[in-house]
Image (cartoon, rainbow over all chains, first blue to last red; front, side):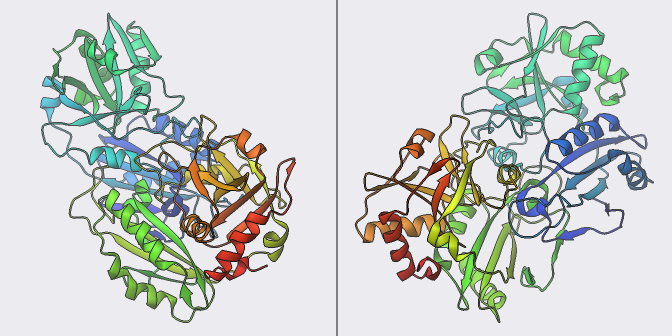
Length: 276
Length: 276
């Protein structure tokens, strides 16, 4: 990241006593910066605010806006990382009611990913690392992400772009860094996230756009057998937008009409990279 | 913490890009300092080393010893916190093979807990926050500890010292900051930790001491019904040693003979606070 703003100051270090470091006691967002603005920032802040409420982090999300604007200054394209931790505290898990959260934000200028991925699709694999089931954490983008780290450690191949993670009961949760959608008989399906997973901002946008263009969407339980019977599969996140899937290991997919119509709708909604 | 040593330097801040902060990508130990030495440091370093291997953190544990000695200097009693993170890296979950771990250590001089807890025992409660099941993480003391934070947030009462955490399937895992043992018909039982929980250093010492004084020990599944039928219950961790339990909510326990014999054995093994 090029520059960081921590509690409003231009520094790039945090106290070793910060509970974000010690316990992963916090939340984060990764926001796409396009044409100088933070894409879907309202949705990101809404998720952050809901998470903060669930973790009892006292935060007025509106107070972040001036700092976000300051962080954005001079950047046209890139990624903004926004972290919120419970700040420093005495030793021990118990959070102090009076703790005042740390606001961390930074921007890196990254290149938008290979256009081939949008046109031809990507390759997926099944990961062995299970995604933990815990309704108390489900949906939030917390700083406890060691499972994703271990899942991404499972493969190195440059021709596989994403891995699928499931619960110990073999229920699909998500990709390591994306949400997953499948198409079956004209219906979009995506895992229900009330017990595990992260409620992605782009997942929300896809569901809204599907509703708008009258593609039926259902959140439900999805197992490997459902993936094997799927007509189309795609993955989403805030930074990439949507990538069609051309293969899950040996199972091949053809470019799908519903995926294309969702991509068209996303492109119109501000996700220009989906314009193919 | 009074003083920190980070990668050998006397500083107390870490880079905001550190993967410990961003993902909880690391491990920690809390070591009791008694009479100027780090109690059971070999066991702590053994667990750290096993965890590092499982997370593919390249670390020669022996290289920590001079820094531990330097951190200890001038301290007689207290708590040493030792953290190991994967260090800084580029954005994204995927760890770099070449990453060189951050070594973080610090000491705080704390008061040894109330002697009443050793003599009369403590009060426990049942927590609602579930302990996630994930064999890939089980046993390790990782920096992903948000569940413990939320569990400890459940109560404030000063007369309850610890909370019990179970899986979603109602299998007992541990306390929020302790391991749990029960006594049933003369046998010690403690939760099997292959799917969830932290393999505590004091838990290991208790099992060794029980073996030495011929108290049978078994690691197994323990449910609430087992707790309700238990003759004695106690909790352990590196800092407190062992606390007998006098009540779990409304269920009362009498001081137990087996708990006392384990405490006697621990006191002889260097856990002086168990000498009551």
